[in-house]
Length: 535
Image 1 (tube, rainbow, N blue to C red):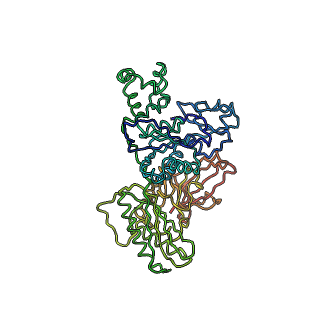
Image 2: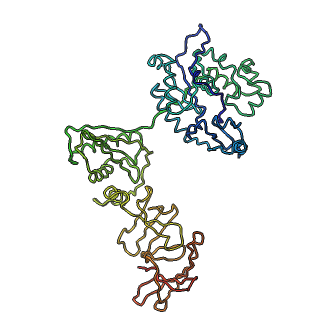
Image 3: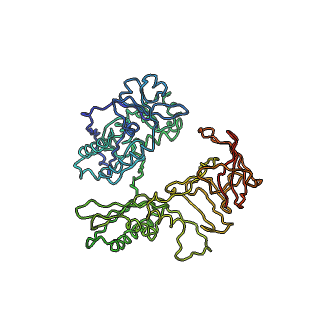
């Protein structure tokens, strides 16, 4: 929904005025919904200043249209709905930003968390707005005006311009605020008169229906309320009546409740300060058991947690534990945490511990072989890597990467730190027999579709065999000393980055019986070079 440009409201007039329409026949409603509309949210997420000519654009039907503009850009005649090329023609120095709905959602969630300080019921169901049910909070904050002033100050401190409106139902409150009306209507009978002057275009109707209503001379909500309901339904459909009932507060609707993501936090104070890790491990084990119960309750796992160790009159020691894959196994996490604790120097005795975890992920059960025999005391590959990384440091281990390059010098390289999603399925392991096979699928930095089938320590690249042992630098050789085998491969690559090669590779056997990988340069002097050895 494109944002509409509203006149700027002076700061002196931003006090929420109460428009009360007397209706003594009905008591005041139990609910009161306050809408905080953010008309400049698409601009505010980019931290754009008012004196800077800038605008946010959206893609609409293959066209780039302005969605919102700063006051400085508006002085050049730039307004919502204007094509971006026309906007640049009006202001050559215009800064254009594509609308980022993800950033807007994150900003709204941050504001919703602030809104929870005023009421437990906050909703983000309406575009560019917070909707709060505040009836139960009026007495606590000293009335409606005091509450709205404090809420407005909170939003402005967070860098957001806002328009506030209150009504007995959430939709009419949003309708008034999004139309630029700062108004309070507490009685449902007063909604029709309070919203009568609003344009029909503010209702979420289909464009075809809105155009038909405009052609019939119907422009405001009051025009629709004057017509017979049955005739209006026959001509324009029941959707129009439903939106009118929502605006009048007749249709009962309850917006979704905003809930903050679950965060685990547990604090334990020690009976006596200690520097002995043996005394800290049982406390950590209790905290991790509580964490595991929390994760099971939310059917979740985690791959990141933080442990704080407090000291007397010293800053706390913070340890961040990152797992290679998400888990909720307290024994596994405890083993890794102990590894970190053993290599972390403590500046002073520990008086208390706090465990915090907010990075929750949905739980996914791992498939296991029903008939696989588990050898006691043997660590699996992932557990071994995790333990080594926690003990030696995440960048202490180097892993094999296979870039998509045909040049032998660039087809293999070592990288520090395996990707978290690395998977290596070893069948045969280190020191395996000659028919051992290692099936790589995205493992250790390889491309997602990379598959390397090791047989007798050789790897196929395309249809050819290449050795795993390459010399640091090819050295000249005499081809007459070698017996050339039929296997051959021509490599012509690298022309795009200035390091092109043109070579004919052959598999050869040296007088000592060692299989070697030699090549002849197709450019230059046409010399022969030894590049590697096969096992």
